[in-house]
Image (tube, rainbow, N blue to C red; front, side, top):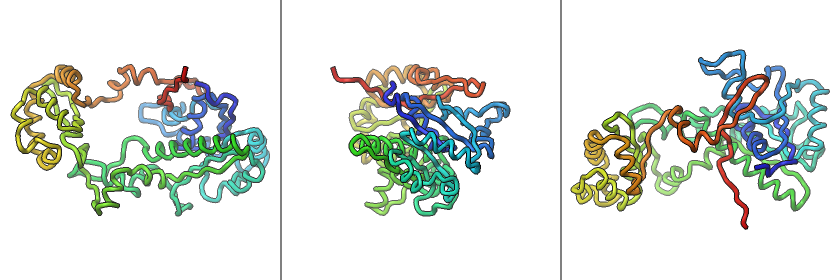
Length: 357
């Protein structure tokens, strides 16, 4: 898919959110030039190696969000290097940045200056906090500050961050959407725009039902592991006879009746403690014990076969190796040589577009 063939993107961002936006456009055919700070030996994520990775090579972290870009190391305090970036911006459609507060002005890459000098340019800017502009903001900091860590984790455990830099990913999606809106507007007006997204605002915008629980009822969501506060059994984990973990997502009374049929426990579906979702939520601990007793005696493949045939929503908890054994994951892998390093990543594009006949 080369929807953006002919589009030129200058990516001056670092870490995850901004570079992921640049990768989105490169995957869809745009020409993306990435400028990294030579004084710091490039994007800091180049050195975020796992213990098993060679420090002489680019990290897999960096590789995951820098696909198909022309990469240049520049000294942002050097007038010639700044002039080089300005030269590229003369013919660029989009610029992506996430400079620290004050740095963009120092580098002559601030929104006001660029809007005046390059009125055709769409600027996509990632910031940390919405109002505390000079405060350093990394993903785990925002997960803490916006409620995600407080809600995440086992009921009797500590607040826990998500294993993916979730807030960066959410901010990247917000910035992509804003830039796409600006591109549509530019088609009508011929003028560029400045699109700003803070990690904080992107996180808050993604709280969805959890925010409404508080705003409408004053309820503060608590840690409850994988459980859903409104549905049962939903998020409960069960270990099968062959020691595989199964998670259920039973969203209706009909699905619950089908689950009881699959597990061959007809009396449970008629138990007054479980006849509706409302009472199942109230009695979920007792229900979990009953269901676990049945899962102890069933092989995971046998359960999955019957659940699939009967329309019972379930998932098997898989590690990364098991994930990439599945066709859906393996078909989305992109490979590339970056500065002599063989790299692999998941495509950031998850949609299919088919034209109308």
